[in-house]
Length: 401
Image 1 (cartoon, rainbow, N blue to C red):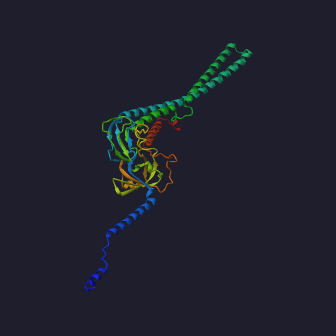
Image 2: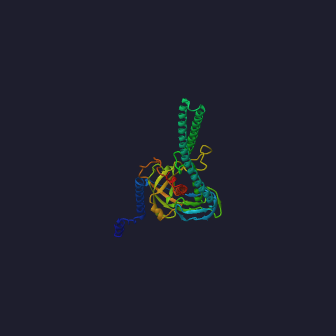
Image 3: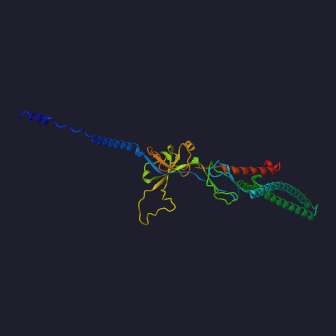
């Protein structure tokens, strides 16, 4: 072998140079690992926590829209509040011309006073009739004694039969007068029996008329039935309005709730009392309200629509229905800090972990859901005026009755 072939053989014996390792395969393997870990993490979250929540963005703020309507007809002379104004229960919203009602009230007051005096006369008639009965009884006793004395004398022949007949006629006349007096007394007594002046039916009738006239006059001033904000004002000055006409509305924004429309497939584990988180479009994710499920609707929205679907006619396509779920706020302070308005859009998330609650209410309500006492106060004022008029028209002796 020649010396020139030795370098060639040594060069061939050296191994070939290794290519650089590719980073692409490493990145792919890392991506696969991340995806698998993320899938495992998501699966663990879903089965342990995530599947115990139901959410919907088909949810809106609802509340009471208290219509302000007149109870008596009249012409508007004053409007006390406009849209957006805050009013409290009892504040004056609208005043009507009260000229006619004031005249009717004055007439009713005079009628009650006159009736009280007439009833007092009935009590006096009873006393007079009772005295007349006593006097008639004395006359009967005297006539009977005269007749019996003359009857004894007639037997001995001391007096004539004619004189005895006159005595008998006098006794009969006295007895007839006593019967008439007793009947008159009973008639007068029946009119006032088991009553006092204030409770006499005639006085009660006159008082009822006065109460109606007083309320009609008082109701020419239309007041706010609840605390809230004025909305939808339509009444104008000088307008002639009839009872029941909508003048404006008062919305108590501290009593709002959420009507969340969930799909029927989301109600499987939903129960009354479950906690709810509420976010609104107006405040975004910066504000999260706390609430709870108050009730689940007893029917779907389509079932209570103006024109419910008739699936038994024509072609039928199954559509997933939605059921309204009422959600109430559990922290009223949040509504004071971030007030809501009727109709705002919200996102609702219901926590389903606690399923001890009922699907439907189990007991009827024990107290009114909403109430106002502004009209009861009006009636109390009317009763005070009636008592004052009765007292003013009583005599000193009758006031103790």
